[in-house]
Length: 541
Image (cartoon, rainbow, N blue to C red; front, side, top):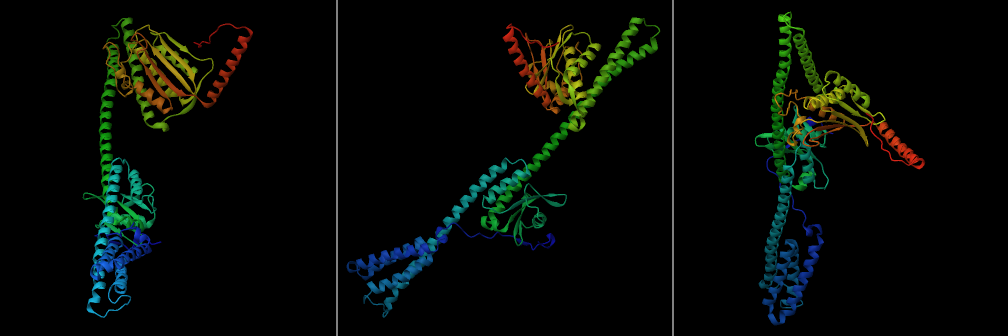
């Protein structure tokens, strides 16, 4: 194999015109001659038969018609052969003396000369017409192919898609090889399944760096892909395929591919610009929101602590207790905010930032309820669980935070004293954890947006606002765990909200639940057979 640096490149400025293929006469070279012999034999016989009535001069016109028709139908060489044959037949059967081949007079040269001229003229004209028709048909096919290629390239969204479309169009199931290459860090990088051989890479790089639109070596032809004045890549095709399809056709496809690649580059730059602008916007929103949310509790803590420090001796016990209680509550609020921010960072890091473990759902929910009720005893809470424990594989810290965030939202936006219900149940291979409240509900138009970061519903000014991260963390946690989240609001009489966290059960847990369900059915059938009495299975609170 040649070294990439020793390629014998040849720069070509004008594409060679490919030979026209597809002519059935060229595919079967004997057919035109056999057919023309039959045709001239027929016209010669007709001229010989009509000679007694028409005379020698008019009978020769019948021979001329035969020769001209052969030239029109089958081209120059068959018509010349037929002109020679017609001359011999005319001289032997028509020209005086008949049944004798002799050229004794000057006028005897006229028939072969005229027949030959008719053959040449008709053969050349018909051949040119046939070639032009074939060329026009080929051009129409290429234009249709280019139009189809243009339509397909308009929908291409990646370099690999452009490569696949080019292969389908240029190779057209006829074999051959095509490679698409992009300049990356000073080297020609293959796109998709493009060949990675040194000859292909070297020719692609040379095509991208040199001025001619296309180059060729012993086995390959490389085309420079230009979009305006900018080179966006190179296309390399094996020499046989390029010659068969036509260099001009290959260059036209290359120009279309260059426009598609330039559009993809511009689209990527535009997406990156939008992403950068969106990132900057989110950073600004994050800083503004975090600054405000941090400033509020810090200001309250600072004011209360300063008051106690300066005037603590003058305050009665009730006032001092209120100030200390405010410090504790604002500290808890500050802790919740920092926890949410830290856990959001873990979620954005993907699975690498998560710690997976086997988690008993019922035990975890009871612990979360106990901790929340210890700090906020304004709402009665009820937990409904199946008799068996449910197991899920998830991040225990994020599970705790997600359920806590939903409970805190239910407490924050529900009337004091209204009940909050937590129902956990298996459904197929999923564990459903539904948390319901009797608050004002969430408008349907806002139900999708409440899961966005830093989005807060417009509430009564007297209702404390959260950080806008709680439900965003819940959705991020559920998606990272391979589950789903569902929001239903209102529940009844225009009030209430239910948020359902759906997590996949462990496989062994699914099998156990199926076995237990089958055992329960068998047990119920046995009980009905012994003492048929109505009954219903309830959830354990």
